[in-house]
Length: 170
Image 1: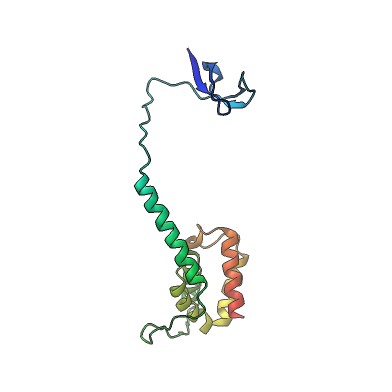
Image 2 (image 1 turned 90 degrees about the vertical axis):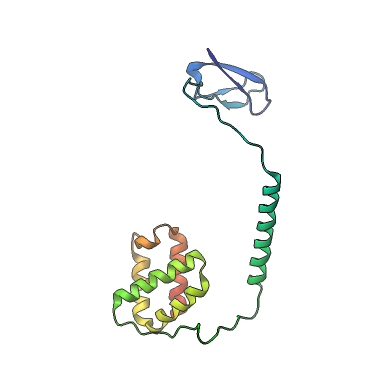
């Protein structure tokens, strides 16, 4: 038995021996380097494909365009919306350094997740404890491994967020 497949370049049908499956070879017609698929086994289920739902695709495209437009509008706003006094958070002096570490991690997590309003409120607590916050952020920047709550944030992004927070505090 042999493996039948089509060349990706010239689309001609090619046959290869079973033992060639999973290897690379050149098309005998156009010399394009092709991957020879593994031979089918009897236990493989046939993959059922469905046609693309054009209506769903157009809705997704429309939502993506709307998201892009909203993002651009937000980025180009020149005035910061006013916060109601009841929603504002008073900066609190934190006596326990462990609590301040939690607030620093929370701030970095909120920034990484794009929760800017909540991050601004958390930052007020860090700013009220400026000296300790700077020391904690410097320690986080030097650490070989990030805090477990921040493990999914890419290292360069995390370092940038730490640097940004430190510069805002300075």
